[in-house]
Length: 172
Image (tube, rainbow, N blue to C red):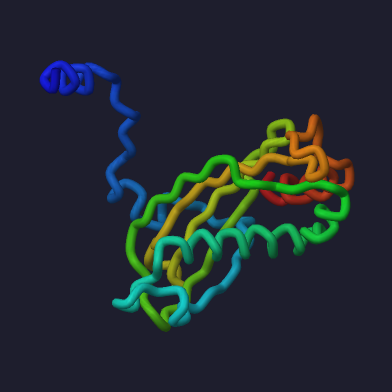
Protein backbone atom coordinates (compact mmCIF):
# COMPACT_ATOMS: atom_id res chain seq x y z
CA UNK A 1 0.00 0.00 0.00
CA UNK A 2 2.80 2.42 0.93
CA UNK A 3 4.56 1.80 -2.40
CA UNK A 4 1.32 2.51 -4.26
CA UNK A 5 0.98 5.88 -2.47
CA UNK A 6 4.54 6.84 -3.35
CA UNK A 7 4.00 5.88 -6.99
CA UNK A 8 0.80 7.97 -7.10
CA UNK A 9 2.67 10.96 -5.68
CA UNK A 10 5.35 10.59 -8.31
CA UNK A 11 2.76 10.52 -11.09
CA UNK A 12 0.81 13.60 -9.97
CA UNK A 13 1.78 16.70 -11.90
CA UNK A 14 4.04 18.94 -9.90
CA UNK A 15 3.39 22.61 -9.31
CA UNK A 16 4.95 25.01 -11.79
CA UNK A 17 8.59 25.65 -11.03
CA UNK A 18 9.59 29.14 -9.98
CA UNK A 19 12.57 30.68 -11.74
CA UNK A 20 15.81 30.47 -9.78
CA UNK A 21 16.17 33.26 -7.24
CA UNK A 22 19.24 34.53 -9.05
CA UNK A 23 17.05 35.40 -12.03
CA UNK A 24 15.22 38.04 -9.99
CA UNK A 25 17.84 38.95 -7.41
CA UNK A 26 18.99 42.06 -9.15
CA UNK A 27 17.14 45.32 -9.14
CA UNK A 28 17.97 45.83 -12.80
CA UNK A 29 15.11 43.49 -13.71
CA UNK A 30 12.66 45.87 -12.02
CA UNK A 31 11.56 49.25 -13.27
CA UNK A 32 10.64 51.34 -10.25
CA UNK A 33 9.21 54.32 -12.11
CA UNK A 34 5.85 55.36 -10.67
CA UNK A 35 5.98 52.95 -7.73
CA UNK A 36 4.83 54.26 -4.36
CA UNK A 37 7.69 54.18 -1.85
CA UNK A 38 7.23 53.56 1.87
CA UNK A 39 10.40 53.74 4.00
CA UNK A 40 10.80 51.38 6.96
CA UNK A 41 13.40 50.76 9.67
CA UNK A 42 13.71 47.39 11.39
CA UNK A 43 12.76 47.63 15.07
CA UNK A 44 13.29 44.89 17.70
CA UNK A 45 9.63 43.75 17.50
CA UNK A 46 10.05 43.04 13.76
CA UNK A 47 12.76 40.41 14.35
CA UNK A 48 13.28 36.93 15.68
CA UNK A 49 15.70 36.12 18.54
CA UNK A 50 18.68 36.38 16.15
CA UNK A 51 17.85 39.92 15.01
CA UNK A 52 16.63 38.81 11.57
CA UNK A 53 13.30 40.17 10.32
CA UNK A 54 10.49 37.70 11.01
CA UNK A 55 8.72 36.72 7.77
CA UNK A 56 5.35 38.14 8.89
CA UNK A 57 6.83 41.61 9.38
CA UNK A 58 7.29 41.91 5.62
CA UNK A 59 3.54 41.34 5.14
CA UNK A 60 2.73 44.08 7.64
CA UNK A 61 5.03 46.50 5.85
CA UNK A 62 3.44 45.65 2.51
CA UNK A 63 -0.03 46.33 3.88
CA UNK A 64 1.15 49.59 5.45
CA UNK A 65 2.61 50.64 2.08
CA UNK A 66 -0.61 49.73 0.24
CA UNK A 67 -2.79 51.68 2.71
CA UNK A 68 -0.48 54.71 2.46
CA UNK A 69 -0.44 54.46 -1.34
CA UNK A 70 -4.24 54.55 -1.36
CA UNK A 71 -4.20 57.48 1.08
CA UNK A 72 -1.85 59.35 -1.28
CA UNK A 73 -4.56 59.32 -3.97
CA UNK A 74 -7.34 60.29 -1.59
CA UNK A 75 -8.66 56.90 -0.48
CA UNK A 76 -8.88 56.58 3.29
CA UNK A 77 -9.38 53.00 4.39
CA UNK A 78 -11.83 54.22 7.06
CA UNK A 79 -13.95 55.72 4.26
CA UNK A 80 -14.07 52.35 2.49
CA UNK A 81 -15.23 50.74 5.71
CA UNK A 82 -17.91 53.46 6.04
CA UNK A 83 -19.06 52.61 2.50
CA UNK A 84 -19.43 48.99 3.63
CA UNK A 85 -16.46 47.82 1.55
CA UNK A 86 -13.64 45.66 2.83
CA UNK A 87 -10.59 44.56 0.83
CA UNK A 88 -9.40 41.20 2.15
CA UNK A 89 -6.33 39.51 0.73
CA UNK A 90 -7.42 36.47 -1.28
CA UNK A 91 -4.07 35.55 -2.79
CA UNK A 92 -0.50 36.17 -1.71
CA UNK A 93 2.82 35.16 -3.23
CA UNK A 94 6.07 36.16 -1.53
CA UNK A 95 9.67 35.49 -2.53
CA UNK A 96 12.31 36.14 0.12
CA UNK A 97 15.64 36.97 -1.55
CA UNK A 98 17.77 38.24 1.35
CA UNK A 99 17.13 38.81 5.02
CA UNK A 100 17.02 42.22 6.65
CA UNK A 101 18.50 42.71 10.11
CA UNK A 102 17.72 44.75 13.18
CA UNK A 103 18.39 48.47 12.70
CA UNK A 104 18.55 48.36 8.91
CA UNK A 105 16.50 50.75 6.78
CA UNK A 106 14.71 49.69 3.60
CA UNK A 107 12.04 50.86 1.19
CA UNK A 108 8.80 49.06 0.43
CA UNK A 109 7.87 49.78 -3.18
CA UNK A 110 4.33 49.04 -4.31
CA UNK A 111 2.10 49.60 -7.28
CA UNK A 112 -1.34 48.56 -8.34
CA UNK A 113 -0.69 46.15 -11.17
CA UNK A 114 -4.22 45.53 -12.44
CA UNK A 115 -7.91 45.85 -11.59
CA UNK A 116 -10.16 43.15 -13.01
CA UNK A 117 -13.76 43.58 -11.90
CA UNK A 118 -13.54 43.62 -8.10
CA UNK A 119 -10.08 42.00 -7.96
CA UNK A 120 -7.16 44.35 -7.38
CA UNK A 121 -3.62 43.05 -7.95
CA UNK A 122 -0.61 44.72 -6.32
CA UNK A 123 3.12 44.22 -6.88
CA UNK A 124 5.74 44.75 -4.17
CA UNK A 125 9.49 44.92 -3.84
CA UNK A 126 11.36 45.59 -0.62
CA UNK A 127 14.82 46.93 -1.34
CA UNK A 128 17.72 48.65 0.35
CA UNK A 129 17.56 52.43 0.57
CA UNK A 130 20.44 52.76 -1.89
CA UNK A 131 18.68 50.41 -4.32
CA UNK A 132 21.55 47.91 -4.40
CA UNK A 133 19.89 44.99 -2.58
CA UNK A 134 16.55 43.29 -3.23
CA UNK A 135 15.12 41.66 -0.11
CA UNK A 136 11.57 40.61 -1.01
CA UNK A 137 9.25 40.57 -4.01
CA UNK A 138 5.55 39.82 -3.73
CA UNK A 139 2.17 39.87 -5.41
CA UNK A 140 -1.09 40.35 -3.55
CA UNK A 141 -4.67 40.09 -4.79
CA UNK A 142 -7.47 41.86 -2.94
CA UNK A 143 -11.18 41.50 -3.58
CA UNK A 144 -13.94 43.98 -2.74
CA UNK A 145 -16.26 42.51 -0.12
CA UNK A 146 -19.63 43.81 1.09
CA UNK A 147 -19.01 43.96 4.85
CA UNK A 148 -22.68 43.73 5.80
CA UNK A 149 -23.54 40.73 3.63
CA UNK A 150 -20.13 39.10 3.75
CA UNK A 151 -20.23 38.55 -0.01
CA UNK A 152 -18.05 39.66 -2.88
CA UNK A 153 -19.32 42.88 -4.42
CA UNK A 154 -20.49 42.92 -8.03
CA UNK A 155 -18.52 46.11 -8.67
CA UNK A 156 -16.23 48.50 -6.84
CA UNK A 157 -17.83 51.56 -5.20
CA UNK A 158 -17.77 54.40 -7.78
CA UNK A 159 -15.63 56.76 -5.67
CA UNK A 160 -13.09 53.99 -5.07
CA UNK A 161 -13.03 52.99 -8.74
CA UNK A 162 -12.45 56.62 -9.80
CA UNK A 163 -9.60 57.03 -7.33
CA UNK A 164 -7.98 53.79 -8.52
CA UNK A 165 -8.07 55.19 -12.04
CA UNK A 166 -5.61 57.84 -10.78
CA UNK A 167 -3.10 55.11 -9.95
CA UNK A 168 -3.60 53.47 -13.35
CA UNK A 169 -2.98 56.82 -15.05
CA UNK A 170 0.34 57.15 -13.17
CA UNK A 171 1.59 53.85 -14.59
CA UNK A 172 0.75 54.57 -18.20
